[in-house]
Amino acid sequence: MASVDRVKQKRIVVVGGGVIGSACAHALASQGGRVVVIDRGTFGSACSHGNCGYVSPSHILPLCRPGAILSSLKTLFSRNSAFKIRARLDWRMWSWFLKFALRCNHANMLEAGHARHALLDSSRKLYQAMIDSGQLGDCEWEQVGLMFVHSERKHYDEFVETNQMLNEEFGVNFQKLDQAELLRREPALKDVVCGAWLFEGDAHLRPHLLMQSWRRLLEENEVEIREQCEFYDLEKVGGQVQAVQTSQGRIEADQVIFATGAWSRMMQRVLKTRIPVEPGKGYSITMPRPEICPQHPMIFEDHHVGITPTAGAYRIGSTMEFAGYDTTLREDRLQLLTDAARFYLHDPVCEPIVERWYGWRPMSCDEMPLIGRVPQFENAWLATGHSMLGLSMATATGKLVSELMTGQTPHIDPHPYRPSRF
Image (cartoon, rainbow, N blue to C red; front, side, top):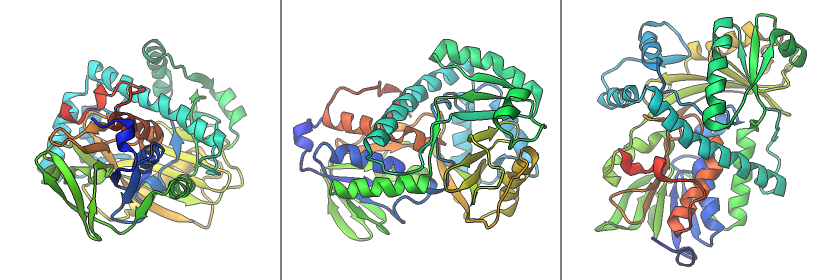
């Protein structure tokens, strides 16, 4: 494995110009690497653009947990639910779901939870340091926590046991807000709510402003960014990558990092390794702040919809749709978002609509990212499969990739994320 000195002045190609690729490029450029970022589209697009902007160490528990399979199968027969599986003949998708199903138990849930917690907690601290130092500029960063709002008392009350488990296993604690306290803090909510759970350690920001800041920071560190540059193949000798073939020609490479998000499974043939990452389609609607605007970002737990108020805008987002690489902007999915906002909020939407968006999240079958060296190559690396937490985990992922590549002692245990586990 390369030392820090040997990385200096070496050509490092990062495939993928999203938030994960940006964080990896920054960490390696800071070590003296000559970094080139290539993206099949435009830098900072895809899921790095239209997500809800949460930096959320609260999201410890994975989707693969006891009871998840039954609730998932119900969506096959549901006309329109926040979590949707569009049944089709796709063996890759059903293979993914089988792997997912086998992990829906308490032991695997806790295993994934500890791995996620380490990355989330580290990233939150690293973001804070970059914000405090001015490295990431003005991305409308706010630290007011995240509210998990309930309209059904049964679900609200059930979280008492979950909160106790989170405290015992991970040392985190959610603050319980009854209806009166919740409405006092958030007059934007209607009295259909019965209460909420507040995690004060979460922060949020404007994703596109974050990506603008990443770009500025990378260019200041002499990172080359090539847009509309599609990855084609690797030139290799044995287990050593020599160059990357792209739509803009050949790029010599001493190290290659694949931060390709939801497209990662397409790299399986080239990398000769299993990458069980399935595209999970999410939607968002961005608009000006309504007159009665929430003060906190919130997730409406019983409708699985989130809202993010920032200084300059207001976004409604979420839903999870397994429909392959479907490019349809579905009106029924967007309607789910606005219907939920109308159910909970006095002033749910505001004209004019700035953007209606969809993107594919890179959903790993065990809800843990793949970070580490590709087993078949000495100098190819994966940084993908962050599911719905790419923005939240980005800074720690970049730091960990840099540490592994340069032979430094990792700041968190890299074992849970190893690509070879599949």
